[in-house]
Image (cartoon, rainbow, N blue to C red):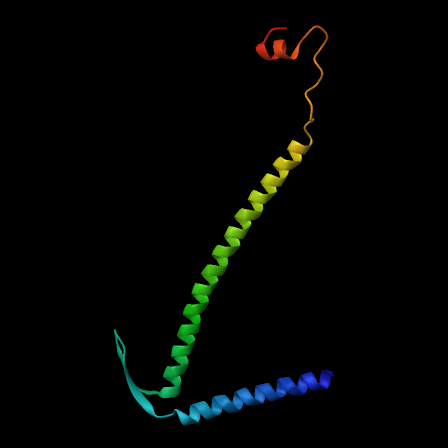
Length: 116
């Protein structure tokens, strides 16, 4: 089974190398790029396309990373809230269900009214 995995990885690597070489040789003609702030002359098409893909990947990674970070912070806040609420429920469970019996000579009404 290990040899099959090795052969598959080798085939994928060779396929990627072949595709890269074919892409470069098929897009070797130079073009002039007129960007907003500067002009570049005689840039191979494969180079310009590769840079555009890398810039898009970088921008997407930044946006995805910020969304991932925001989600982690929200999850952390929710986890802390859940822990606080679970602690409160645990404290409420430890309270007695009935009021303690009044002391001799005292009534509940008198105790609540401050008389006793």
